[in-house]
Image 1 (tube, helix red, strand yellow):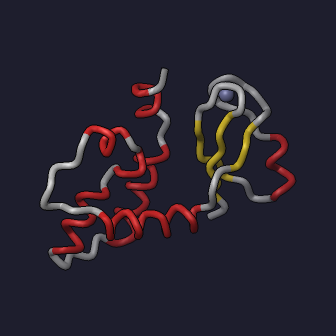
Image 2 (cartoon, protein in one colour):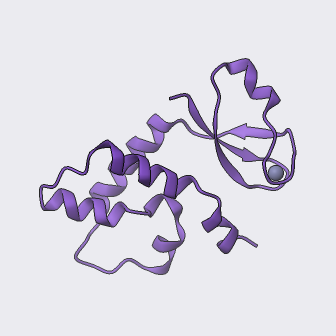
Image 3 (cartoon, rainbow, N blue to C red):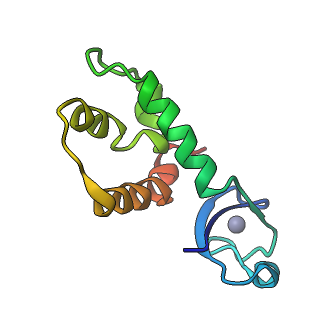
Length: 113
Ligand SMILES: [Zn+2]
C-alpha cells in the first residue's frame, strides 16, 4: 500500500495518507489546519527496520519509564516482544492494528504543547 506519513510544517501534526501517484503529493492538505505544506516523513520500510531494533533492545523484565509510554512508536511493542518470547505468531492483522494505533494523532494531541 502506498501509505506515507506526513508532518504539517504549519501546525506540526502528523498524518498517514494514501498517495497513489507521486504527483498527487502536491495536492495534499493538512486535515487539522488546511495547510498545503506537508512534508513526507521516513518510509514504512525504515519504520519497520527501526521497530526491529527497538524490539531487540526492549527488556520486558523491567518496567519502562514515562518517556517510553509517551512515544507512539512503542504502542504494542512490549506486548509484541512478550508474544515473540512465548513463540506466538501474531500475524499481519495485529501488525495493521499496531500501525493504526501508532499513526493516530489523538495521543499526540494529548501530549503536545
Ligand atoms: Zn496543519
